Image (cartoon, rainbow, N blue to C red; front, side):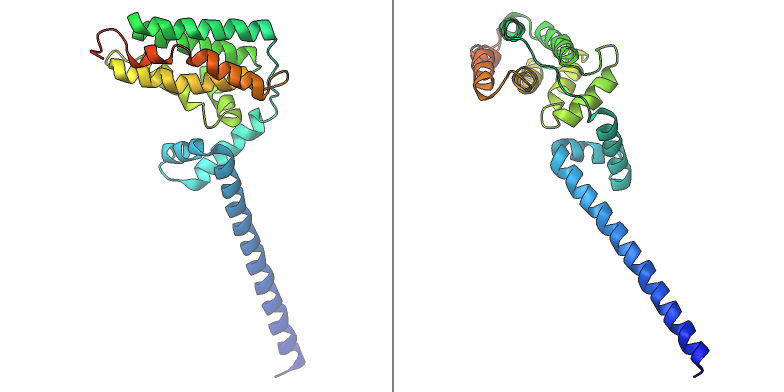
Length: 210
């Protein structure tokens, strides 16, 4: 075997190894990115994956674009009087559920979008953008807004479905009124306590027979 042939074989071998290494690094990077997104988005990752028919690359691209576009949002703080007003307003919405479940859910939908805008998320007039931004910062709770929105626009939703939607929405409400500068563990406890005072009413709407 000539020296030239040996050199060509070595060059080809090195080239193959370099390509293989690059492919392995790219695959590892994609896998690491997927795991990172799964950890960050939790249930929102699964929902997005389902929405893309199980196409992981499409779901990965979707979520990455959301992070790039909305990840830089820094939620604005709520002044204590504003937070107290929100807590009182949410208590009224929960009380209203006893006599008017559908109206209470509609009010919750509108109220949550207004609070989100106050915290610095996109305005209610841009509902899809607001949901996308909330999914980046509140991935474990954003489904609450989707739930009340679906229920509020469904003429066939049962009282139980309306109740469940409002319960899901309450979790997002607690996040939005307890997270950010000027809040903390104590504020979070206060929010949960105030918003939960009328929790029993949600379980026993009029006409439920309970």
